[in-house]
Image 1 (cartoon, rainbow over the protein chains, first blue to last red):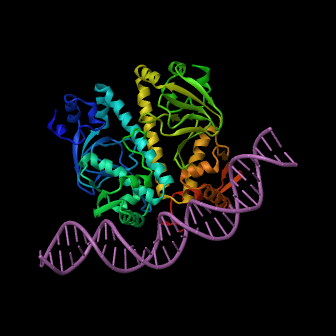
Image 2 (cartoon, each protein chain N blue to C red; image 1 turned 120 degrees about the vertical axis):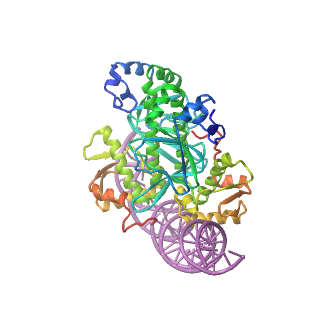
Image 3 (cartoon, helix red, strand yellow; image 1 turned 180 degrees about the vertical axis):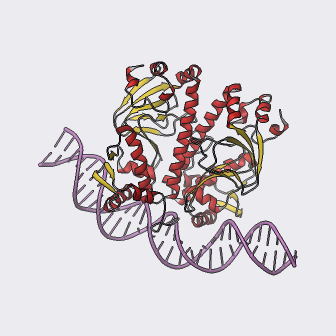
Length: 237
Length: 237
DNA sequence: CGCCTACTTGAGTCGAGTCAAGAACCGTGG
DNA sequence: CCACGGTTCTTGACTCGACTCAAGTAGGCG
């Protein structure tokens, strides 16, 4: 097993976990490893689709812009998450690094060769696409039918699980995204996001030791505000 | 080629078009054909995932309910559309027939056997999943970042293409869904939907010969309402 | 013709957006 | 170490778009 993979946070990700320690050597050898500084782009929405990616560390946002500058963030992408489920000739989202990011990159042509060698890989990528659909349905539901405070509480519980998967659970978790990013993910304005954070803090449902660090004080009440359906319950899908 | 397929509106759908006239006999023989009356359900969100479907005629809504009765419609499904991209043990949406619907049903186990016989089928289903992701991104964008009038104009132009694919383009198109359905798709209320329809009619951008029939009178202006957000509506109002 | 459902319209309210200002934080350089 | 400038976050006052509540109208069907 290559050293790079044996210590990688994505080793147990949906993508890489399909390979055993022998097989993953082949998989890793056909990849390019990329490093992107915070604020850089993994891909642009107008780029021709030539590669897929699996994030090894850091956090990205997948986002789309309008001509007049409005932005919608479609997803926050963490270590172990796959990027490249797309149809058509261009990605239709840009991948912006919120922190410094490292990722493995495969050329689509190489991936197709790997499909022949490892049929279960293709199957696995289909599973990943299904999960993406499930996650987007949850987000659709929240955007369409929830109030600001419900959106934020849902978001906090959702990001907590993603962040803890990387950092481990030490009682608090870091938000790698700004308030503006949160607003653009939830279809709100930055002022509304800020006001709701303040409200939740004053109600002692959460604590904010720093602006970008959240400690959940009363999980039950927080859940009841957001109507959160646990991420690992298998309910999503 | 089976008679059923040779006259089916879904013969050229992403799913069925992967087969030639000989092959599709095998595919069709392993299917069950279903008929669902308007108002009936193709599947319920809590059902265990055992089947996939391809719609032959009619229109469905894929929707999710909250405990308090709120509803979010995730998609409108037309003839030729595939249903069953899901992850986890249950579908997470219900499929409700807006009109009478006919569909082909395959058992997941049978589908896996067909994958062995027709590897390109599995590939095709992945492509369908990718398209679903793309469509949901568009919807997310609209729900998160557009005003009521922009949502409706986008919706009308979107449904027109789906409807014309089935009915052909005769200048007007039918809405198989109620105003409530439209509201639950776009994250609005029925009153707001109704008011926007009236507004578009009074501005002579559309005509409504019947409540459920739409004729687009000024496509360019309609497009400009949904796309650009000019003088009447800036970035967030 | 009358019932039921869907759609429309009006009046009033409220949640979230807009505009504007100030506070906290961060990195940089003296 | 602190001063400075830029960025992000917070807060306040006000506005407005969409929701709520409440009638009333139009279609479809028995």
